[in-house]
Image 1 (cartoon, one colour):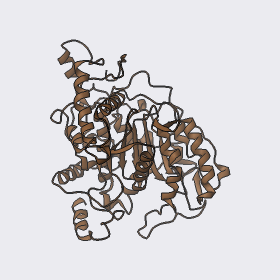
Image 2 (cartoon, one colour):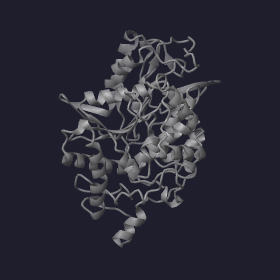
Image 3 (spheres, helix red, strand yellow):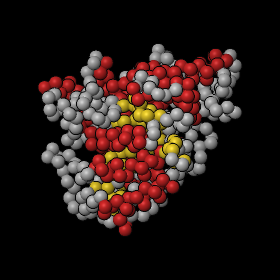
Image 4 (cartoon, helix red, strand yellow):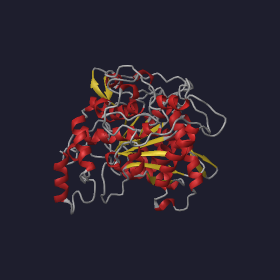
Length: 486
């Protein structure tokens, strides 16, 4: 079973990654026997912490029925070996060598096209990327980040008054305390002032028991609360990456995820009405960029560990998901400041896995410093990080801004492409539009197929008002593209 065999060398792996011809195309229906995810080992770390509070996570997953077909590699492995083996392979086998050579080379050669990579050694990169692919196949649970959580909470207390916060969630670091979580870290933008658990002074900030829901919850009356829309999208993304669909997968076996607000509060004071922009959308906290930057060593910094003066990737972190333009920019700045190269993943990698790169990008070809799509934060000799730069789902899937992005279908296409990319790097099959758990959140497979067709014909997402050119100089072409998307 994929990831179930330990070997004495630095690498272990499985069969050759399928080519674009072998891999289901984006949106294509996948035979049920190929959509299973029995990829995690019994060594999943400590048991998951109890979940406090009421969450809609279970409601979202209720549509998924337990079922688990085998890995996409299983049949090919057994045929190639001519044995009754279940596809297990050891380092140095024909399968892993081919996998390492082809997929690692494809990724590395694409990364080396970036001007920022000109001083990097290809051989070292190949070894590092091979280790990353091996770890993605294993997808082992990671331990709690109590030290990082304590540091973030302490810094939040220091900055509450200094940076003009009016409200903040009682424990901004709560999800970092989750044990046995997925090897991912999600970073969202900012907390609403009237979310569940918001407090009005630094003195009220305190550590809370681990929970994957409390810190991004909305009160719904009678003492009940529910996950905010943004957290629902995060949970669907996590579940999709681990193989839960509308008809398959076991939601009870999921590794929980950690989501951290890059700005865990707001400048609106406790009890005051939320501030709105002229279009009716929620106003961001004052000084958002500065607030995110001040907290970056304690939010994004949870991905790294410092030895002396050097930063290295912290064990148990493979994927970083940065959500929102401010957050993607801040992530790039932070990792580059820690000595990492922030290199875009080549379109050839998406194509290899039957995906379209522009389906993963919120904005294409715009004069906008925010990175979009998949990047690799790379530093020689340490584990590379896949950094998925995504739009902020809560603000873009519904409400006044939804029209710019195509609503739940537009955001769902981006998030599903991101999940399928992670799955492909772990050696798993794409999840088809029709099977996607994002359908629970309003994602339309039919509209998604139409969007993919337009992207394939060269149409790119409209330049939204957050992008230079969306308001200035690009109005006519922008309106045409916006009309095409809607």
